[in-house]
Amino acid sequence: MCEKVDFREIAAKIGLVSIVCFFHGCDPDQLEDSDEIRAILSRFVELARMQTIDSFFHKFTPQGLTGVFILHQSHVFIHTWPEFSFAIVQISVCQAKHFHLRLALRYLKNAIKHGNCEIRAAIGRDQFY
Image (cartoon, rainbow, N blue to C red):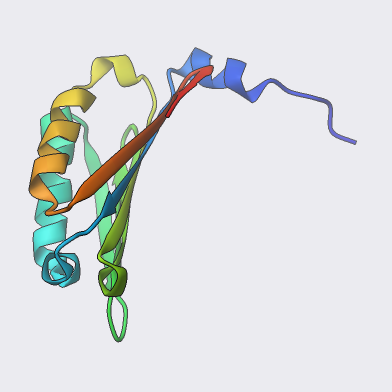
């Protein structure tokens, strides 16, 4: 039997930030363009001053894509559903205080063409919605 562990305490110790961005009313053509989405996420990583280890993108048939940037600090991924004009970007970063996440998030919100964007973040012990 597993003992009870306070995962929020561990997250606080490692400086974990987990952010999920929900993009609604997106441009379906942009969500299908794996080169453009890769460039957007690459610039996001660069602006945040994080280090990419590798990246991988998969285009689904008939539509949609999933992409991930494996980072020295953790990961960034995107899932797109062009048929619903919807995308999710998830960012997990350790030692987040060392990075420029607010700047990078502002860029991301401007780069992905959308009608609405909702951002949810869990920072250490606290969750912000």
